[in-house]
Amino acid sequence: MNLAEWLVRTARREPERPALLSGEHLVATYAGFAANAAGVGAFLRARHSVRPGDRVAVFMKNSPAYLELLYGIWFCGAVAVPINAKLHPREAAFIVEDSGARVVFVSGAEELAALLPSTCTMQDLAAGPAFDTAVEPLAAPEPRAPDDLAWLFYTSGTTGKPKGVMLTNANLHAMAYAYFVDVDDVLPEDAAVYAAPLSHGAGLYNFMHVLRGSRHVVPASGGFDPSELSDLAPRLGNVTMFAAPTMISRWLAAARQSGYAGEGVRTIVYGGGPMYFSDIEAATKQFGARFVQIYGQGECPMSLTSLSRDDVTDRKHPRWRERLASVGTAQSCVAIRVVGEDGEDKPVGEIGEIVASGAPVMKGYWKNPDATAQSIRNGWLWTGDMGSLDEDGYLTLHDRSKDVIISGGTNIYPREVEEALLIHPGVAEVSVVGRPSAEWGEEVVAFIVASDTEIPAVADLDAHCRSLIAGFKRPRSYVFEEALPKNNYGKVLKTELRERLNQD
Image (cartoon, rainbow, N blue to C red; front, side):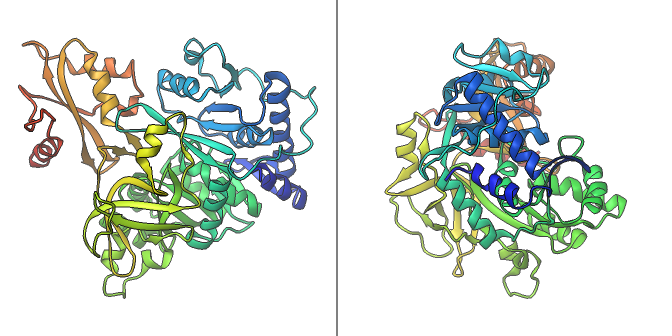
């Protein structure tokens, strides 16, 4: 079933219910939301010849129009390719080309135009609306099968090249249904606030709120501002939102200064990075019983495990500390195991790789059968994350087998940063690792061996990185070494580099 059917049904049932808001300002009712989405779908079909299964990208910051574009893409049966708005235009252009997107919606991204393949048209919302009123809106969403693609989510692999995770209608249906069972109920009077990027987890959580006819709110700033949220939440009431752990820690720090105690917030779902025990314990004391944790990946969106509101607030269970430090138990639609390299289950309490199977697990990687075969084996998704299960089924993350750095809830892959730095003439060798950060969770640190006796200037390296990759990926510190530690096979020992940072 086409995901846009959910919007059509809610609009038919509650046409005048508030749907899209910018801050407290009403942008569209559900009737208007559905009509605009139908208009976008008709525009894509009539003006750009988009047909079912074609890909359409969105490279924009958060706005109410973002949701209209997504549903317009689905309305005509196309596949949405949301692109992180923080990416460098070159990185966005790669995703557009790799996905074969026929159209990319942007809002004032002029730099991207010259980088796009000739097969893709850029539609700039800064220059005009996303649909033509002269084109008759589509009467109904294009029928789609459960196994048809709906969302192509790009996530980088250990090689640094982004991979397209193929999410089907059925994958996203399962994710949405599991939310109601394992994470939180959704009420018509709720206000889903999108302070995190709609291109990622926050955007995936729109479906549940469309189903129930809740409000969808993009803060006036378009992003995350603790003071803005503390002021906005009591005015909206019944706020639910997805937040990265770093967002919660920043909001907590601001709340302690202002005295804000979570008024107006009903539920904060956190995930997307490591949440330190002390942080969630302090946040619960400040904000109350408003937190639920989820653990997921793009390959199994938001659907691996959940730690319930009761578990987050429980202080009576003999192992409540261990549970609070965990990521909870398997969601209803998946099975979770911890295995060794041979695929055999590890005993309770022993660390191994986390594998999962179930309805939300991706169809595979776009145009990458080798990577698909490596990640999905005998029906099980090998997550690359290391963890252990206790006797009650609570999963604790211990490490990541991949060297991904999670900063501000966003994945940064060392290889792509290293590749960018190695282009610089003053860099002979480089290894990038993550260092714990109170503000961002982790920050990027580059260990560099200079190509000659003169060490490159930090400002020069910063400018070089900004010209090739997104600004948030650039190193926050550079450490210059005469040589990098390596094993007998010539592989850089990143563990030793991390230990050096911890000793400083």
